[in-house]
Image (cartoon, rainbow, N blue to C red; front, side, top):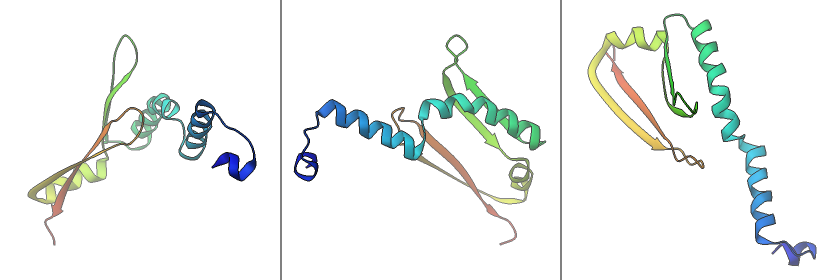
Length: 110
């Protein structure tokens, strides 16, 4: 398709690398996002007093394991919810193949 549209031959590895760079340019770099996670956790702790923010990394390699974030407002409001809890997860479609888990409760006033 590239040859017919532009008259140039493009090797598989060159096309793959160009596609990877384009995806990083559009969606951001996964490695950089994990690197910035320490900064994000520090900002959350500093600006959202009472929130629970726990970041776990491998001690020796500093590789991300998991993060737990519960904003103070949501956490404090949770005690006013009906005892119905729904858990949902979704697979994150990045090269790291992680999972995002969400917990949802029903408001007692509704």
